[in-house]
Length: 220
Image 1 (cartoon, rainbow, N blue to C red):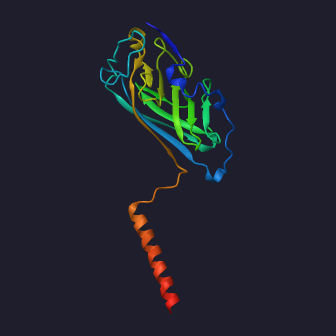
Image 2: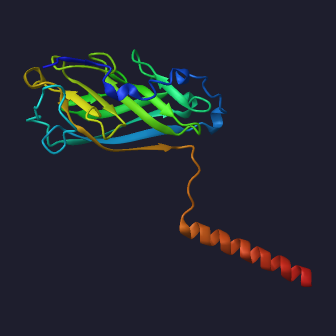
Image 3: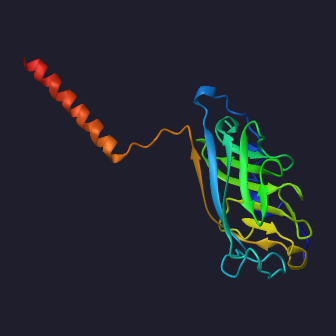
């Protein structure tokens, strides 16, 4: 059984595009800056939720296999590269406490910027988040060992068997557990709100009345 997994396959996000690595940071007006919040839901490793076995490890988690949890992380939009691109940092994560936060609890451990980091963020040319990866520091960001617990790694690649990996006290005998990412969403607080249907109707009515009043004045 393989004990250590370094830089697991989920980090192929843009790996072939080295020219995108750490492009110039956008210098937006601080007044217009927003906060991007990513929320995700994971499920433990059991016969239904497992995304695939790692190496020769057919284990399922006897304690947390049927558990689910929701976590999130947030970061300032000022770190988004101008024109999009890839941010990647396997040492300390791509942002610190000055630019973001992490909140995730799994298998009895609370994860924050103190013991974990977001080490991959990828954006399209419009600055929208397309891919990300989050993990614990115990084996280094992107590293995992069945002999080290607690530890975890989560990525946006929902279909990948490596999307949610974690260790517990049972991992020393049973190996790294492979759960599943059920869903994730990203919202930007700076994005303009979408008008509700009622608001659109009121706006249209107001414009119609204004047009009628103008026509009446011209006739007078």
